[in-house]
Length: 487
Image (cartoon, rainbow, N blue to C red):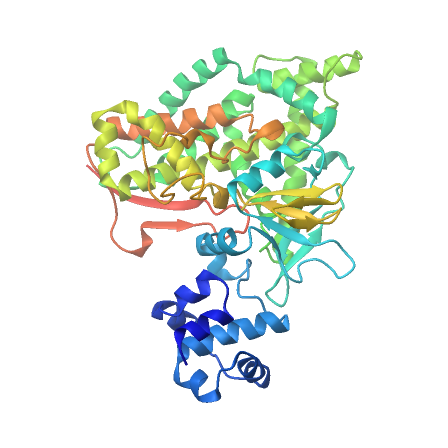
């Protein structure tokens, strides 16, 4: 059977390239048994039984095509363990073959579908189209009992907890952004930068003299945890509780938690909300100068009929600031340290020229976004890249995939300190939902890197597979461990 004849059966360049890719075949030919349907498809394209059994590559490709034609198990499973651990091959396939992809079987038969959007321009178009793509959280993706992706409806549409900052729309969202955005003033950022530097130096003092450290426990976690606690105005002695509550909060949307874990997470999150409400009430009686004082004043303003926040809104904003302000920054500091240790040429360049640090930070933000993506819900029928999305569809905007789109970022897997458009990555979103804390996050990463560069001449990953470990989660795959040798 000629290769040209095979190629005609597979219009995708990916299939044709895979004819020569022995590794691709070996990795996937674990239990490929010919079935009657496989042979029927072979007859359809003119392959004989002998040709399919003698050539494993041909067999595997026909098997994939036949099963796709029959509507069977899809080639990619976005909730499979290996895809969760490393989604980049899946993202690559999506951008090449199905930039707007409806996940088979994820939605109930009588419900609109679940779609993934993977290319930069399409993601950007969707995130800027606020009329057609609502940010209110309607459903999340989970792994069903059969190991396949399933949408779980949140029943939060129109509820207060679904209408705060990143999961809010319309005028309510605009008011919240205006009021909360004032807390991130340039004067405060300057004070917070000095404070972050003091905290970072103190963190590294605690591990002074150690030849090997875990960046996460030594610096990446304690720096943003203490900084956020201080700038919000919460008691420092409550940091362990805040971290535990944040971990539980992140279990709720990760799609992988067992029922008993979800029950524990819900209970802990309720305690978290109650705690924040109590702290807010204390502040309402006597507002201070920290962020929680600003929110208390906004509650007072609302009570006077002025532009402000209801009490539930202010408490919910506090929740989002703690969870978002701590955990995502932990992952970003850890990622910056990981890449600096893994590729020592960048460590040397930043030590020699600190002006390189901001460019390095932007490339890390582009490459190592730990979030799976952000959910949207279509408010009307809409078309993206030639694909129709019915009203009520659930959509995930794949930030990490968009940031690796070679049409936008040439040679996307490389760290390039002089990349001209690196600031156009989507790691902080875009448009009306651009992350309010992005300046704070950038500052914390730069401060953490500078503290490491000032303290150590050399930083390298420890040998072996235990040098780093990521959280096993569909929604936040941040690094939980980065072990390095320092000198």
